[in-house]
Length: 266
Image 1: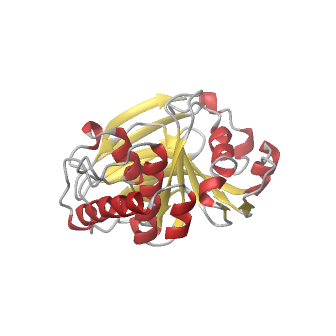
Image 2: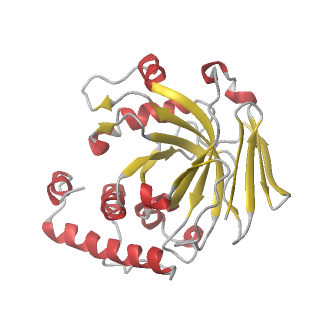
């Protein structure tokens, strides 16, 4: 995001500079795998708009955006989203993930959509039918989690949101034909790390089972920030498993009852 775009978010020059200083700290922590406990109080985002602005500065520094993560704490809560820079790595199932910049090695089982059409920003909200038509395919996925913070679970929430909501990469399994007919209320998932079952659950996404609600929010309300979504971008729609931690050399497999499996190794 450019300085002019940040200015459009009604940030003063002083606040833009403050957030860029915060971004430098987070980028260094991620690149050198030397986490920080927290951002200095004078540099920390003060509200959600500033946390999102911090995300965009990081995404600009880390390269092109290949998609977005979007989720919610409950079926009724307002979704949160973050760009997923290509820097974190996008790979098909079966990949051996490079160990550069890896420290946390967190994994989450998710369901992701690949866009087959642009969804430019517009005043009229996209309907569910338009969104379904724009989705080229749906896949089981693993979101990789990394963080600039020593313990993101104990870090102030606005800081972790600003740190790309801990995104550290993305892997996708084979497309599921006929995904539109899946009953997500019955969809179950199992996460296995090094042969041990770490999680099993049904309808376990905290955002609920209406995944198109998340896509709709990103395409409509989110367009004020993204400028619109593009063909070829991925949208991954929140964790079905919570965060599980792996180690160097670990093999991770996520298996959905209908969507199938995706696996990878560190």
